[in-house]
Image (tube, rainbow, N blue to C red):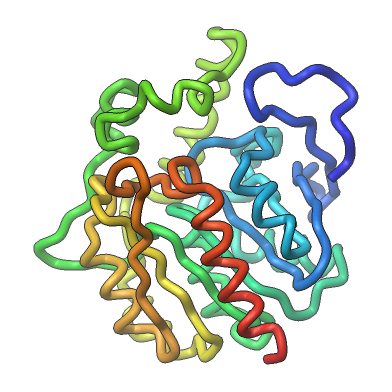
Length: 276
């Protein structure tokens, strides 16, 4: 990853690099060597190179872009559906010259990664979804973050332990953080407000023949564990793994609470598929 030329504005903040993708100036961070891994982030923790990213980049070539409307990638009226983002990322990886690669997504990024793998199964060497929404699982509804205050959301995402991870919640100038947060929630609502899932995935996931790792948390209060079990059932070569916590049970953000353990789990899986 290119060295940051200015002091971090908050913990883990780094300046991105940019690439033009179909006219959209897209922010990304890239580091490491080895198997190519595209990591798609969830609805938050942007504008950062986290300990999780660093740990994973120790073993793979990691490319971590920011979705349209998230981080330092601006909103654009041309992107307002999941399939728009899929096409955006197809153009992005082609711009980097990646024909086949490993695809990893957390939360919203997992939903996007699954959709990408459905549309371009021949491009995906392996698929890893971490605490991902995207499926309709009757009897196991997701929590509704659109009805929560930021404090309520943090309590749910960190299972009541948010105070232990205060450095992950810092955003610098409060006014700028408010504007930035509004932009990201606007884009999240475009992609994920209604519906909260893709009913066609139940049938379409049969197209994804690459080995798939489904990483669930012990106590995910946003995406019930039954959702990860359902992903594992529908993906032809899916395997479910529950990531355990060392200090307390894992929740929706294992890349924050167990960064090295999650990075190791993903890197080991990628290494096992490297010859595919």
